[in-house]
Length: 537
Image (cartoon, rainbow, N blue to C red):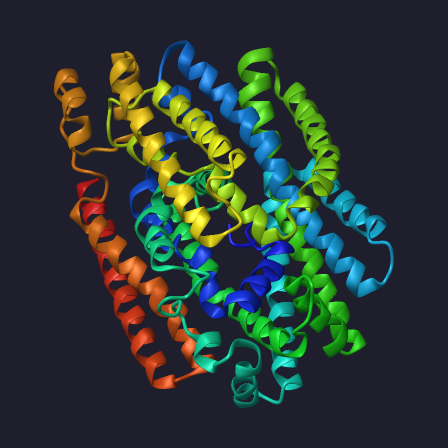
């Protein structure tokens, strides 16, 4: 999971955020911690119990009739083609920039070579090969980023010298290294920060941070050996993704902001540091780490997109009786199709001007759909039309508000206002549609309840009518305790590591101490829950 979300674009995007707004600029994605931890303790075990191959397949397990079939097919094509191509396009775009700066040659050929190798092993090995190579590529990519951070700090004369030079670029050291936006900051007004912390993490759909899980995060949970493995893997992903991985990027970004203050594209300061600061042998390691990060993401995107086209389109609608040989052959063709199409999306996305712009676009585009994805597991009345209307309302509202110029998704204040309005409109629409349309077939609801066992008051009516026990929400009250503790643990580790590097180190002790206590509480709760379940069995 963490390897997939470590693409060639992420160090560049983080560097751009830090160059423009200091360390606090990362709240654009740091705000998603609460949603990620919610997936760990409430949804990971449910995804594993569903025993589906894609999150689109879940629609026909949860809903019934033609609406469910239409939703499954539409969602599969929507995620496999436009959304997938946007993601691969910005990853390709980042690799084009990296190779253009580091090698000084036309980068297209080198990118095609990397893409072709990735395409080859993804085609031949499927998910198993993708997971194994992701594991190795993450180690290489992370090692390269840590090495670059050390060289960058050395180039500016050490951490103390870096802190002394930051006022040249940001006006003050505090503005550069503060973990929170300054009071009255124009780039992140209080309204924007509050919308991030109170709304965006649950309301907006974003790949890798879907409310309640989904996409390739759910794909990894499906493939885990047990529910517990899936849950622990998702917990480790959130710790590594938010608390461990960012700081080598951030430190290098601060150094690049000092060393390269006049870049037209600040994100490329990260790549400039590779070229200027690393000796030839180490520079080769760093290029290998970029290649590893790029390939780990592209391999997953190809496999993930092909899984939708094969499982949810070809096998479901075109050839329901296809044997395994036919399925494998079609999966290879689907992988090749996505491989070719992503090349075109790279140049289209180049018009957005920055990778951060693509991030903001995708977040704004998925605003408002998160609530229905969360509630479909715990409220029987949500039906297929709820999801269809949420997706449609979000898309239409976003298009109208941006095309008329009312809100600018590239502007922090505009993007938060756009998200809040889109979320409000979308929620009103899908709730109204839910009550105006017929509920899911009773037999489908009962079968889903028996198989997934979500529990909670939202399923009481179904359970009572079917003569089934009314179970509590999976995990019971401890899940809420673990969720709060998980958020504290991840933010404590994130802030503690940052303070350990940039100071003051006394604050690091408090943050890391809070994180350690929260982790200990989670470990105790999970251990006691496991023992209880074992005794029950």
